[in-house]
Each structure stands twice: as structure tokens, then as C-alpha cells.
Image 1 (cartoon, rainbow, N blue to C red):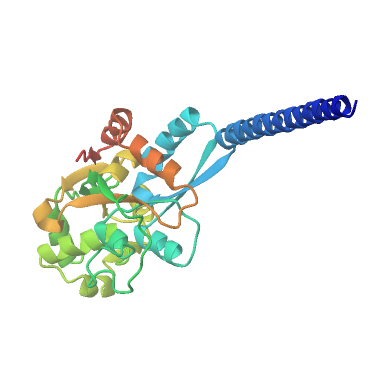
Image 2 (image 1 turned 180 degrees about the vertical axis):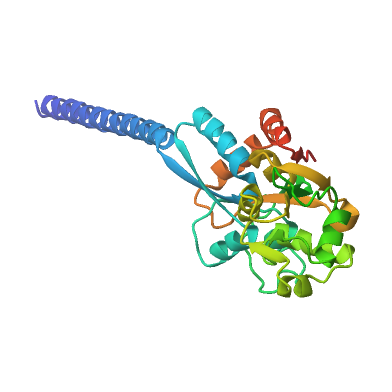
Length: 295
């Protein structure tokens, strides 16, 4: 009798343990399923989450980069490309002062070098480190052009004509400030031609713009007799190009691009720059006079 009761107790205990184990396994399965569901939901949310990609670019890229950024946003509806155009020197300063920025495209190597820890210390004199390692590359080449207003009353047809007019004080030239790339290229041209910028400015024969768009506007409005701008800006503004500077006169005009290491969205920033090197993007750039650099 005792043995029978003992067996019954063992059977009941076994059944109880089985029930408990089933409950535990079911609970684990539900938790795992819930976890998978949560992960899937989070992933879907991240893919559809709206992201602001902040791009700082040289003013000479205003028209082309606006067009291409709109095309990129159509392909990536969750990305809102926020564009900030100005002189490369001004953009470099804004980055250094802590402005939010994911991508930087400069109109010269100097301003990018000043932010790149891998650049020579003689250029990056402040030891700044903003360029994401391995992300920097040369994306475009431009040309520096001499442009004139529609009326061209001084009949300027070349850099030599410009030189003659500046030397005899008969013309007014518009150029970029010394802290912007187009101004720095112009300074090299003046030096190549044997002209003294300071003397000419003091004599009232040179006027300045804080970026290339300001120089373009002065020429468009015939406020000056000629101006030195990028070939692409001349095209966009419908200005007449009478001469183009050679590399001997001012060096190559190369635009470097990079993702910044302070970017909140480095992967999207890399994808955006990759898009700018596509065949479709090359066509847009080349239509206005840029030369795409495909290394």
C-alpha cells in the first residue's frame, strides 16, 4: 500500500515537473519571438527614419550640387541633404568652430589640408583633425577664367589685355579675397603677369568679393570691366569667357572631398560621395565645365 502511494507521488511529481518545463520553454519561445519582432521593427524604423545629411561645399558648386543632391534625395527619401555654400575658407572656419557637418568639398587643397591630420604640419599649422581617415579623395577639376560684362566696353580679350589695362589704370578688376581659393588663384595669375596686387588695389583698380559668386555678380552687373572666376561659374551666370588660365599661371584647380570624423552619419555621407562619382553625376558636372576625376 505504501509502495503504491509512493509510486503515485513519483508520477505526480514527474507530471508537475513536465508542466513546469513546458511553461518555461513556451515563455522562452515567446520572449525570443518578441525579441525578433522588436529587432525587425527597430530595423524598419531605422531605414525609414529621416536623416539630415549636412554638406559644406564651395560656392562654385551651388548649381550642380543642388541638382545632384535633389537627385540623391529622390533615390533616398529618408535622407534630407542640407547644403551650405560659401568660400572654402569660410566653410573651413565654420567646421573648426564646431558647426555640424558631414561632408566637406573644398575648391582647393589648402582648406582641406588645414583640417586633415595627415597633411603636412607646415600647412595644417593648428594640428586640426577633422577628416575621416580614408575618406578623402580628389573629385573634380575646374579652370580659372577671365570674364567680361556683356557690353565689354574696354574690349578686353585676354589676360594680356587685362594686364595692360591694370598697368595704365584704365580698367577695374573684380577678384576674390585672399582667404578664398578663387582669390588665391588670381593672386598667382597676377604674380605670373608681374603685377603688384597691393599697388593696384591702393590705386583703385581692384575690387574684391568674399566668394566667387560675389565676383560673378559684379561682372554680371557691369560694375567692373572684368573679373576672374571659375569657368563653371561663368557658364552658370551666362558670362563671356575671353581667356582661361593655364596651370603654369595658377596651378591646377582641384576640388578635394571628404567625410568628416565628426559626422553623425558617416555611412550615409560615404554613400552620398559615392553617388557624386557616378556616371550620371559626372555628366552634370561636365555640362558646366568641371572635369570629373576618376582615380
